[in-house]
Structures are given as C-alpha cells and as structure tokens.
Image 1 (cartoon, one colour):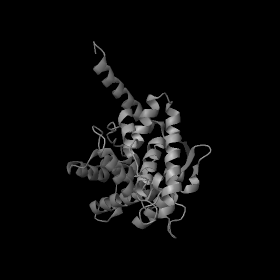
Image 2: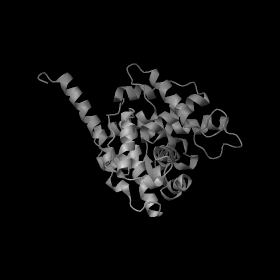
Image 3: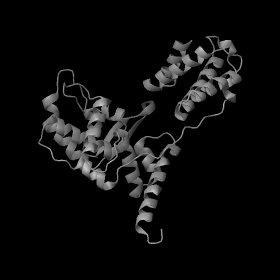
Amino acid sequence: MVAEFGRYLRFERDLSPHTVRAYLGDVNALLDHLDGRLEGLDIATLREWLAEQHGAGKARATLARRTACARTFTAYCHRRGWLPVDPGLLLGSAKAPRPLPAVLDQRQAEAVLEVGSTGEPKELRDQALLELLYATGVRVSELCALDVDDVDRERHIVRVLGKGRKERSVPFGLPALRALDRWCIHGRPLWVKAGSGPALFLGVRGGRIDAGTVRRVVHARLAQVEGAPDMGPHGLRHTAATHLLEGGADLRSVQEVLGHASLNTTQIYTHVSIERLRAAYRQAHPRA
C-alpha cells in the first residue's frame, strides 16, 4: 500500500524526491499509530494522531506537512476503494508559520560579489555561481541542474527547470554574464572529464556540482562580509526577490522570475521590503 502510494506521488503527482520521502515517512508513522489497520482510519483517529504529534513538540511546519500528507493519503485510499469514505475531507489545514526571511542589504550584496580573484578555476566557478544565484534568484537544485546550453548569452537569459518540471526563462545582467564567461572559458575546461557531460558547474573531480558544495561556497563568502547574516543559497534567492521589489519590479514579474506557482508565496517579499522601509524610517525620521 505504501509502495503504491509512493509510486503515485512520484509518477502521477510528480513530487520531488524530498517531498516523496517525507510523505512516505509520515504515512508510515500514521500506520504505526493505527497498528497497521487501515480500517480504523477516520477523522477522530487523524485528529488524535496529529494531537499526539503536537504534544510531542513537533514544529508547526511539520504538523502542516503531515496534515497535507494525511489528506492526500486518505483521498488516494478512497479512490482505490481501500476506504469507504475520505476522512481527510473533514481535516482542517494546519498553517505553518511564515517568518520573514533574512536578506542582505544592497551594500552587503555588493560586498559578497566584489571579491578579487587570482584566476583559479575554483574561484572562477564560485564567483560565477554566486553572481547567477543573486542575478536570477534560482533555487540551489535548479542551479546544480543547469547545462551549458541552458545559458543564452545573446539574450542574457537562462533556461531553468523548476518544481513540477516546469520550465521558465530568467534574465540576468552583465556582471553574471562576465563571470559565466570567465568560468566557461578559463575555468571549466581545466576541470572537464569524460563523465562531466553538459553540466554548467562542476566539482573539483569533474562531476556535476552538488547542492552541499554550493551551500559551502555561499556560507564561506558571506563569512567574509562584516555584518552579513549567515544564510545559504536560498538566502540569496530571498535577497534577489527583495531587491527586485525595492527596485520597482511588480509582484507578477517577481513571481515569474522565482517560478512560484502561487502569488501568495511571492507576497512574503513585500513584507520584507516594508519592514526594511520601516526600519529606515525609524532611523532617519526625526518624529519616527
């Protein structure tokens, strides 16, 4: 049953491997609560299970995911005829908290990107990926999946395959283009191996770069900037979105750049900009 549900999530819902892994863990936990008997699954049991999770101190984000998983699972079981009714329809949606993300101000962003280079391949690669992360706001998984042919140098556009295998085109500026050219001309050829394939960014052994390496690069560069918050690649994504809005970009355009399915997800960045505006006002206005 769990295996079939996993195949449904992977091949019909086309969820990411991370989400599938998390949902299957949640389903196994729910079935453990039921002692493996699906017949006892009703709304009271679902609420009891979630109440136990809450009592155990699970985070609200975890409870929200497990609620969503339970609703997906019961709907699937009902369609397969394993449950006479779908109890998940009566289950309320738990809302995860949405704290404002930490972002760099423009001075800090410039300091992160304006670091001298000796021309070593690693420095060229790191500079190129940092420039592209900030210029486009792509996710770290999207960055790692980029191929050389995904970069359109003439139009200054990168083709990105995002969540749900949705493709989008994201523009980038001249600094990112120059950094990419330096990496592709002077750095990447020195690391290319037989198994490198078309990957745009490579590791030191010639394989496609992984997310862990990108995170280490971002953390290391931010540590060199005084006052900069410690954050990973997603922090540069938040920063890019915030700076776009502060520069006058409309919310729909930012949604397209980030590849958000819902405008509600993008709206959190308006709160970030407002908070920064309030901080500047309090600091500068004599009657703030």
